[in-house]
Structures are given as C-alpha cells and as structure tokens.
Length: 406
Image (cartoon, rainbow, N blue to C red; front, side, top):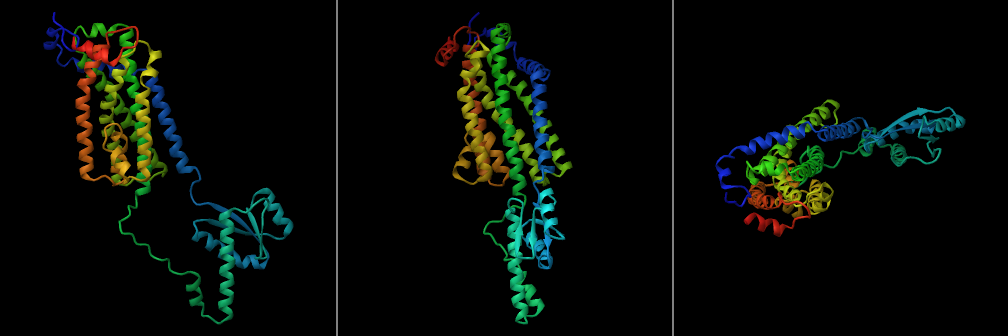
C-alpha cells in the first residue's frame, strides 16, 4: 500500500469522503457533554449576569447629595443650589436644619453630606463632595449677581435671562452617532467574549489532538480517514459548538440587558452580536488550524503550554489592539489590525459596529481572512499529518513537514 502526503494509503482516498462529518459530530457531542464545557458556560453566564446587573442597578446614574440648610440665608439659596446641581448633572436634595447642634447630629449620622450655614459657609464632618461644593459656589455667585441686578432696577425677565442663558448650540463637521456609547459598550463586550472563545476553543482543538495521540486512537482513525479530513472534522465540530455557545450567550445577554434596562439596544446595535458570531467562525478556522498543529507536535498535555505560547501572545496582543479600536476606530493602527488575519476577527466587528469601517475595508478583511485560512489549512494539514503519529520528544516543524512528504 503506497503512502500519500497525508500518511494513509491511497485506497483510503476513495472511501473516506464525508468521514470528516462523522468526526465533526463526534467532537461536537463529546465536548458538549464535557464537564469543562458546562462549567465554563456557567461561569461565563454568571460573569455576564453580574456585569449587566451592576450596570443596571450599580448606582452609576446621577450622583445625589443631601444638603442641610441652616438660617434664612441658606433657605433663600436652597433653590439656586438645586438648580445649579441640575445644570452640572448632580441631584441635590435640601432639608432645613434647626440649629448648629442639629446640623452636627445630621452630619454625624450621615443624613446630610454638608450643611450650608447662613448662606455663607459650608459645614461638613470631614470634607464636602466636589460636586456639591461646586453647586453651592455657583448658587452663591448667582445670588450675588441677582442681588446686584435687582438693586439697579433690572426687570425680572432680564435677570432671569442673564442667570439662565440659552446654551450655546454645538455643531460638528461630522455627524455624531447618538448610539455610539451603546455600540461601544456592546463592541467591548463582544471583543472580550470573542477573545475567550478563540483562545478557549483553540486550546480544546490542541487538547483533543494530544488526547488522541497519547491514547493511540489517532492511529486507528488514520487507518480509515485522511489526516486532513480528521483535522477538518475536528475544527468543524468544535467550532460549531463554539458558535452555538456564542449564540446562547449573545441571546441571554441581550434579553437580560433589555429587561433590566442596562442597555437600550438600537436595532443596528443588535447586529453586533451577529457580526461577532460570523467573525468568530473566520477567526476560529484560522487559529484552530494553528492550535491543531501545535497539539500534534507534542505527546503529553504538560508540554502543551510551552508550544502554544506564541499563539497565546498573538491572540493577547490582538485582543488589546481590538480594545483600543473601541475608543479610536478610525486610527491607522485600528484599520490595519482589522484587516490582517491574526486580529481581524476581534477588531473588525468593533469597527463595523461603530460605523468606522468602509465597505472596501470590510471586503478586504473578508478576502484576506478567507484567503489566508484557505492557504493555511492545507499547510497545517500537512504538518499535522507528519507529526500526529510521532510520539516521544517534541516534533520539530521541519521534521513534521519532511515526514508528511515521504
């Protein structure tokens, strides 16, 4: 029986067509029932639940302060302090205080954050919050201006216009997206999840290869299936499971965030979830081939961490570059990392969701990602077939390449 480049007999080439689908089903169901998958899914959902609930009920809204008013001067300034606070995005609640002893007692039990004494000074237990102090100072200035204008017989309507002028309109050369903050938040979450998925499922591919190699199961499999089909089936099965998990996570997060009011999802922001899933498949196909090659080079699980260090660093750097794209999606660096295959799966969904990616850049990223993956898989398959049957010491890439050609 003559040997081919895949390390199996040529008679197997006519009988193993479609066997990759059986391999894909086997890896899908095996990993789905794995305790590690169940635990990791539960942890991911728990973390997302905590983040969403923290955003919804974590008190990240308008800062609120309680101000005690002691004396008639303070009572007159109270409404102006409330107005000044509203103008700077602060909610100030006022309450009268009978005397100095009552003021000190209120500060001691925390019922007020500060006390305005006779409209002239602020009393606090330790320090006055900056926002509250600013509101009081603004109110004092406004009251002084009002008093001066009234003394000079300025009509009340003119005083009101002076103290509450019409805000200066803001005009920009480029239209601003009112949903940018929401889109940026969704994009950030998508990048974090995609990073975890690419790394986690890539390690699963490498782990599966080592398990089959160490148990010698791969020798039985390669008696009936080509190495490339075995590799393709493994990538498809585990990748499908990863896509399914992403869909569940995205649907759960969107529903929970909408019900709790943590995020108000506009219709086009919901497409970010679909973008993340689509680009995950492209990125996974690219990285899974590399992880499979890494797993085939070693025979023991303890050696896996050393051999995948370069891949870990590449994915980690891509992750941080994609995070940077959420704040500056139009920078030259963001454009580059959204197109190169190593980082496009993380960076391009961010730029698309923020409306920064042009049609040309999207098409270029797709062509580069699909083309590089199409070129990589046969090369990875050859190295995989040349190394997966070799046990013992770590196999060098050169030796695996030469072994596959014999």
